[in-house]
Length: 582
Image 1: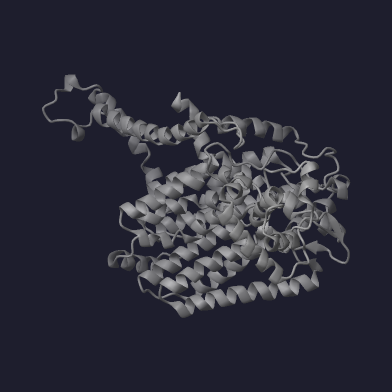
Image 2 (image 1 turned 180 degrees about the vertical axis):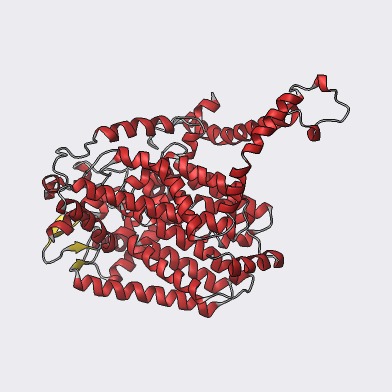
């Protein structure tokens, strides 16, 4: 029963309805799945050694008649194995160094199975955020996605990254200009897939060519990326979190190399520093929270490691570039600044909860500080049907005081901390969706439809008008949904598609190995992933795309415990650096 349960996705249960039996069930799933996988691998290995009939694995006094397989049969097996020697040689060559040719080959290998999902999901899968960005580009008129009001005089809103607004709008307009809007969006999805495949190829080439990982591991990783439905299906979704992934992956690789050179006191070239800055800027301009992740990580490096002047240079140039580019772009493109409430979703939700529950007995100063920021009547919007499963109702619409001063926000944050100490249970219950990131069940998915969202602003008549209804799938997407659902319920494969595998299992495995192998300092290599994991605790609701970084960089978790900085390896790496570039 446990084995068949591995690919099963349990129904979501609200905290108020969860019983002790339900939580015991989740515990048993966690405790049971790992031993079953390990036991299965051990049984297969034991059977292979016990019955293969190889003289090296059997006692010399075992008679031929006692062997399970005859010599003739084993000779045929060996001849089949010999036929795979070209594959072995090719694998050794493919992952022996990081080069453009090898990366291109690996990218093609990934794109072949991915193309099936791209074809089924065509023209693409565009959700509300992307629909808004395309609409702004098409009309030159922006609205505030939080308050749902037009922004006169502005063509875009910084609520979504302006660089991606230009990218999405360009491909949509390209499709319209050639008489096939869907084709333009299909080309955009294909571009996303190609960029993602190339980024993965850079990572695998770095593993084999610079970290010295076995070609077998790299080949297994390539197959994992190629055949896991998650990696083939998600590039078909045009959304900022996917578009940003190639830049994030490459920056993570550059960061690992930067830290290896710092720890081994090796020379850090201008090229490496320049690439780190360029990709950091691209990360920041395609997914705004990335700039905070990168800043925190580099500050940790600045405090705890050498090469501080170089680290300061990277931080300063990156921040200066982002601020300078945005300052020019906001003016030239008429971009409205995004609201400050996006990063305050959790404090707003928790403060709203205690204000509604304890407002009559709350300290007058505390109540005033909260009501200065949350300007709507709690009871009124609750009576109207408040959705407690996310913080969007309190951070959007007219609840958040967008004109609040910095001092008022600071006072609000102080009160938020104080009220949290007084009502910790209420705080936890009010943001129950944060626990969904770590439950074994939710599968990575962006939905199966062509277009959805902002119909009240005329998007249904402007963007892909042939799809009349919002969230309407076409025939190919219906087939893709059936295949994806079946895969998510398949034992083992379903586990590889589950969010908790990448937010809990793999991170814990990586951290545990670092501790067991006495390489705790290696955790600095995974610090961008650890900080990215922490960012899910500021999300306004549970959405799998908020943890995409952990999914797409999951292989990096696995190699972190293995990275060493001994003299022998570093000398080897130097030779790689000098001779392994093409």
